[in-house]
Image 1 (cartoon, one colour):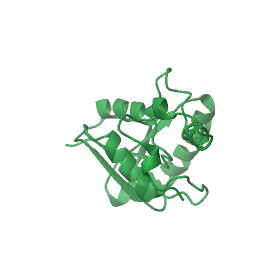
Image 2 (cartoon, one colour):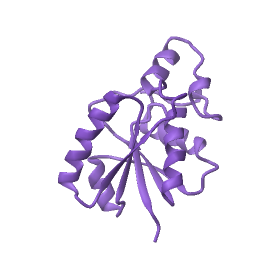
Image 3 (cartoon, helix red, strand yellow):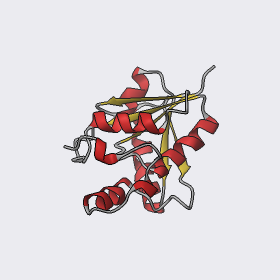
Length: 158
């Protein structure tokens, strides 16, 4: 039996923190689907298609990772694909409080789907997509915050 999980997020852009959480998830699961969600609450810097391409570059050496995009509720995506676990990365206690509420709501909507929290490594916990976008938009060097091989200047923004 294959242990399957989804790692959903906006990933705008995908960071070393995201990759760290993904690597931890791969120690627990046979296959992880990294799913770029279309979040109507957020206006992203990069198109969803660009984010999918970035992640594919970052995970090229991981054959047990699939990358795709989806719309709607994460639990609906999970149930439509028979994925029993959702991976959520945590950087801070604030992340935990928000993610706990979302996990509880998801549990009510889809009791067969379980959320698994994975903390980012201490040396990467300060990296957020928001910080990376801010550094990028202000002309700073973001390469130390994103996986090797990704050049954000080559991707389409909104």
